[in-house]
Image (tube, rainbow, N blue to C red; front, top):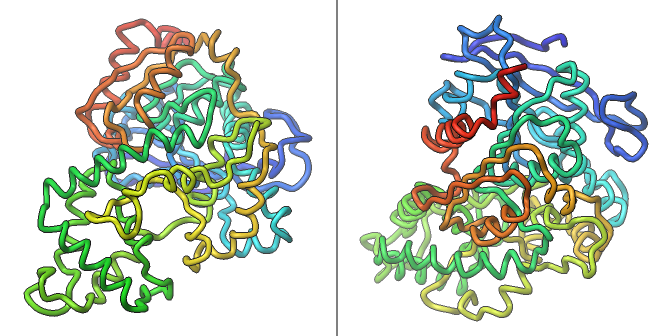
Length: 448
């Protein structure tokens, strides 16, 4: 295992590495010779400086997303779980395929794959079944098959259940934070649960900052009456304004949106009463806050597709939204939307327009890779400790608890102390780790 680079950031020793994995795992198996077209899988090995030469257990971090690259730590305290983890583990931070330094994909890569059907087939190689095979291949080839612990944040929890479905023999114990999917998976059901949470979060935002009810309404009025473009050339529509709520399940997003609105108007005293024009600063902030990645939005509903579907995804979030008139662009107070994709995004946004043909195919498709095995999860023997955030806006807590009730050796800590990103503080992972330690779930790990 030759490092591409070896260096320190304050409080951490880091090695950079990369291996080749197949784009399509159909003709290859983890730990065996790689066949067909290959892509790079980049990963970092991180440890505390005092443990550089110690043979510590391994912990692999399963990043949220979809389409999220691994963390770039500034120091142990810059991401709370890392500060705790490096006290006990050598930490592996992969960039999931298509992200970061792992054969990063963009619009050009997608377009070069051919027509919409060919593009959609390419996109399917960036879902959980391929990601988990990459990681198992990494474990077998680069870490001598040593079993490791997994920590999954958000979508990383989805990957955790995929890992326990496909390769439980590679895992000693698993931790998840805000990321247990419902099994069986159904995108429409997910949005039936999360749209009401989006409404609740919006109303909480307005309760905290009541002056923003009029500000948001005024912004919506201005952009409805005028053809306004964002700095990147995208039309600024009310639908785009509503997506400012996509981060309302994390802190301090209420404050971030409030202060954006504070400087929204270029005339009068900055209040909504006399405003007629939006500031360039506000438009720049909207463009930056609602920017997307080539995997995050296009794959948003596909992460719920497990094997052969009875019915296509068919823009599940939009179908649920259509049943809820309170989310109309004309409704007041204007409600914000959360982590959901809509067809208009792939028409209005320059960054997403190249993916529209592929999206049309994916939304009509019913053939996907198998990511969960309900029977195998029911008989699971790998200890799983989950943090379930009761008020989670993105991953409904009742659906999480229902799944966990049918996963063997699973334990949960239900709390309303944290938002969806709670693992990045200094409490959540420490609590999960201590619970597993007290229960004896890590005894085998340290016996090795």
